[in-house]
Image 1 (tube, one colour):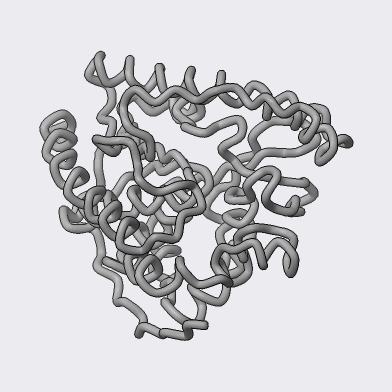
Image 2 (image 1 turned 90 degrees about the horizontal axis):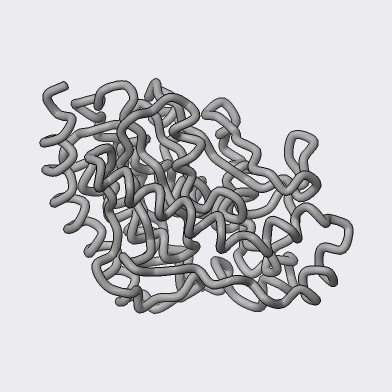
Length: 301
């Protein structure tokens, strides 16, 4: 059991707020989300911040350290805690009802071992939206920055993998993974009035999500939630539609997509630390290249 502790990483404030109407849109992906964390390092290197950030699951959770300006904090978590059985393991299912140890990931690590600076996060005046799926309605519920507190309850709900996590209760709702209905929340960003999007994905170009075919498992697990089952069965349609929209916006000059160049060598729950650190560094390198494209398109507005 690892109890490595790192002193609080001091916040490095951003130096340039990008123009209003420029949104950062974040896909989830579990452990794959550490690619996005590497991209955020490039954003911090350049001192840029978005006035609107929207995401689900690991994407939005890893963005917490970006907004608080804590460079390399997420990398410390990868290096020292992702392989810990308290982070993700089958043992957690027996002990806590979920594959991920949500209290360990979202409470013990950020409060004790690798502190997250919530005060620095609170000081940044931006719109920050976290999505989770309402099990009763089968629709996405969005929580703004005022719902982000030390307990990180909405982040736990947004990351709650269906079939591998317990249902979280928050604000009168029963919630699971925000990536079920809004895996790439580009449609919500457009509806909120944004006209340029920086989209960080955790899948390579050409990836197509296949249908979920195990209806019997869904009925067994979520018999009381028919709308959730419907959403799960149409999840591939939502993902592929939202991906296609992002790609069309990029062709139209209204988006920049940042994503892995090759299929990932890590799974949604993978714990191969060298591979994860390589993924993190890949995101950092590709994020740096993307910053130049972003600033070329919007930097002078």
